[in-house]
Length: 612
Image (cartoon, rainbow, N blue to C red; front, side):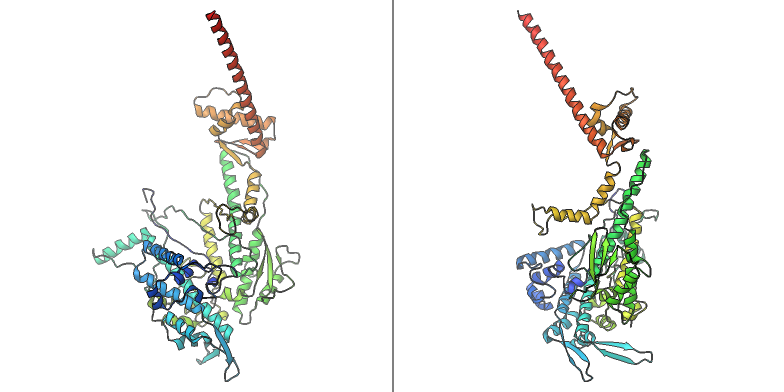
């Protein structure tokens, strides 16, 4: 705004880890909202939605990884609802979100057994009829239709005939997990879009003005609720002339990850960190070079560890890890082993960035290791194909569209992905480009490809702005106050590239003080300068003279430079200046003290003579 206030805001999400919804990694908690919902919902609404207690969802909400008391859960859920209301969510919208969370949890409780059908093929069936009934009720579709969509796949042949394939227990469980993840991911993105529509004041004002003109002064309709068509994504604010207004962007990105077991999510997260680290290096040198040139300070190129080769390994066209994984996902017979083999063949024999361990882990598929800028990480590929293709059967999408719960059905309506959509945004697996697709569809956009495209757009925005970096450090693994774990902190700083940043700073002129501040610290050492017209010019002249004198007399000239507005010194220069300043001040203080004592003694003697 002209007065400098905030005109609008918008939120974008990156790589929502939807696999956590179904079964979080060992020793880790699920999303907090699922715990607070299952444990904090009031009794009447719990009975209406048929929601179990936390203990009733053993896979999704495992014991010992986020459990808390009933009172804490009630308070947490109350806080969540209050926050939604504060932003602008209505009563019906919040009830719709509750129904979606209930559906997600109910689906995580579905399990399957299998038996041979009349043709001798393994056919899946729900293990628990009550769980199947609860899942069907939660998504508001007939139970038989839900079970049929989870346990079979229909393919329309070129002749127009319909071929029905019976799924085994593992395939049915995968289909159920895909549906739960799709509901959660689409609901999450719908919330983000809804919040964007509520906080985007500029767009809201423009829409209100247009509606007022259309209806000739009648009040405009209220914003759509969760059951109606999703509002358009918020756009950057524009000024009075239609140009893009200045904005402040805050990027809260996941840090570098290296766990005991690393999967596809960690590969994406670490790829993002590689891109951001490369940008951080570029910003550091670009900013320093521009500042040095503006100050008239000589600049020498500083060597640093370039991670462009790792980015090329991951993102190169046709031969990069993401491209080779996409290629394997498009094949009906694609496997994780074939992906790792192709990746290894694409690299030179003496490659130091990629390695493939000779032995497989007992848990499943093959593994490969990448030497990232923050250290080596081993990736287990057992679920790479599934997580990258993120398949949701078209039958399930079509069934959700027929749901008797309008907000849920709205999430699966056929529509093109919005610009800048998240990798997990709505999946877009039902209808459209994915219709009748599955892993063999030539038009299916994978999670990895969407993430790369979104990350590319983000990097263009970052490169066009002035960036400030804030590094967050976890002081201890238990999240306890007054506890500092030095090895843990050191490891985080190393993984965040801070040690490299410090090394870069130390290699140049890390001590940069404005001339007045420089003189305040080291003025006792300054030579006498010729009188100047004003105090500022005198201070600048003294600072320049002092810096040049130290550079010439005590150290190499390249270690200290006097800029137009600041005196710059390398570490050795600053240390020498500090030592000499202390010595100079100490000497002056001793002289002053001696003189004062002498004058006091002479005055005392004169008084004695006067009295006598």
